[in-house]
Image 1 (cartoon, rainbow, N blue to C red):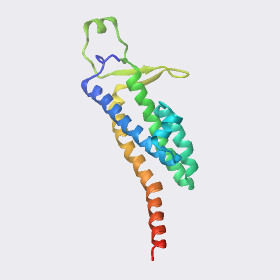
Image 2 (cartoon, rainbow, N blue to C red):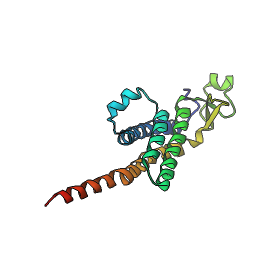
Image 3 (tube, one colour):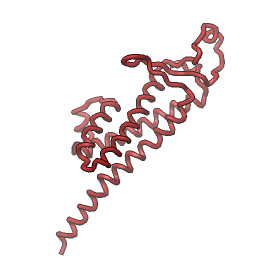
Image 4 (cartoon, one colour):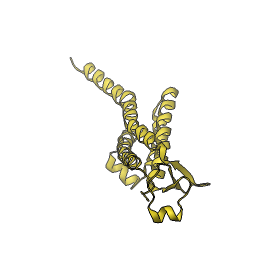
Length: 176
């Protein structure tokens, strides 16, 4: 990645995107483990080195099957879709080729022109190139910072708390 086209603030945002992505990945693994009933080690046997996008596809399908309420399914789909979108931005931000919006000129490369903050990342898409403008990086990093919390809250409210309540009620029913 050419970094001379990006400001320090933009480079810091890319760093935040990378760190936040790791947090999202961790929570996706936790929720996938719960939804499938498999340990994280067992999941790694089934999906060795699975990328986040693949995990999200599996989680989306299995999670919606586990949810009985259409409202909860739609809420879950909205969360997973948002994570998929920011993951796509992450891939472009980290793996895309960064250049000035008006293109890198030979003189700007040779002269080491100062970054003007007006850069874009380009990566190959299935039909056309995918472009991400550098001025979007902070917003993407902020959104990715919230996504693990949103997924965790959903997981706790929809799956963990009801299971805990059921377990407590069952224990109370057995006690004299």
